[in-house]
Image (tube, rainbow, N blue to C red; front, top):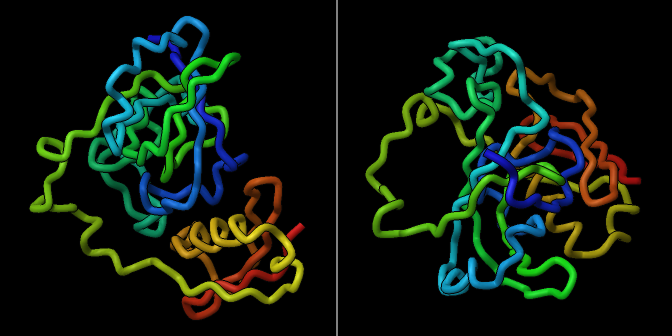
Length: 220
């Protein structure tokens, strides 16, 4: 297989990326195709779909070997589960699958058809193998059982801003950063008060968590 496109996002490092697609709908990604696939006819009818599937490459997690078990962060990093029972990036084949909202298709002179999507959980520059339409009648399963993830407590946090500089950045970026931090990007074995840093959209955000409240302490 070879990459047909790459996605541009504000996620410049792995830390802070939502653990699943669709959790933070405020984030926007732009999918730019390789020259060979910038053919308008290949996208005919896609504009009629609200959501799409993205098959992509864990390009920053490729390894020569693989392990049959992994340590899911949601379980605190101290309990092993079978790799096929998780969405860990460390797999026999480093393939990712994400469901995102298709905002629009822009037909450009230099890059051909460009897809704008919301809710992507992909690092900036991630190679994409394929695009498929999301079919609600076949792909949605409200009765599905979530295995070990159903026993996990809600991880969503309250976010409070402690630095005035945060209020000087564009409102849309404020909202995106808060929505990302609400999902708690830190490991389950974190300690209260420990400081973390996240890079997003050209900013570096420092924060700490105390009693399920996340405090933004600085932004540069």
